Image (cartoon, rainbow, N blue to C red):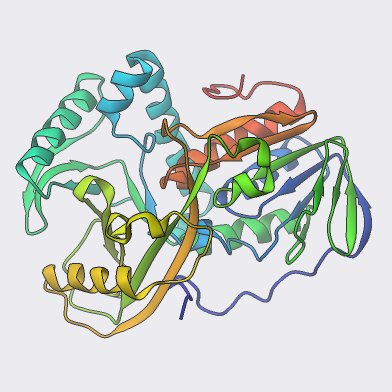
Length: 367
């Protein structure tokens, strides 16, 4: 129970931090965004220590649905309306380029098969049309879709991936290049020059907190702008091939993909859980899991359920992520509102350049 389908049991683990270390930078959080930042800092020639309270990708980074979607949490036409066409277009293009970069970094973990946004109601189908028209108006690839999954739109540039495999590959690469990474080493006290853990301490020039769920607990300054929720998933034994692309349905509240071996990874139904799902607890619940089983049945999937799991993710009221200096010398990125796989990796790279003292070429968030 509470083991994601992505976990094949092959990770040998990393040591706890014991004693004092020095490095130019300390990165807290060994998920997709933190590891992306560490990789970029190493490329820029810096020394880095990375810490995680659990294990590599033990949070949402290794427990999500495995979608690589361009853009932000809100659909493209909504982003255009709220943020302006110029910024929306630059952000979308930057995430497209980030997907391509991720494919080049860890090709074994990623399949660029596109994604489907499927409407559950006539109102949502109208919104899919507005989404499609906005993407096409700005020259981005998208087309109307009607098929066994339903009606909506197809975005061919999106991808599906194994999130845990990718993070573990990045961690191994970082270790080979000289990064010092530690698991089960929670940050108890964070300043711009020092991070204390239960058994050790890192002295450094600056700190990057790259955490999604529970970000507001680690940095209480963000409590008025960040709120953590629980996302739940399940997976089945292999079934016949039915879903060549990941499916995003009912405004993103339901989502699933079929893995290369035929297993179905399905999640969502957070709204069915109501206020109880606004929690920092990350254990599956009977109520939401029952709804996920109903969704599975609605898709006519008949197979034993082999995995059930949950993860903590953070949301902001605007849907825009946190990306800022929250204390002198302490930067934070996170709160991706449920879609952090691409944006988080992009922000990790941009944050690394800020720590480096420059601006990443093409940066859209941190200049």
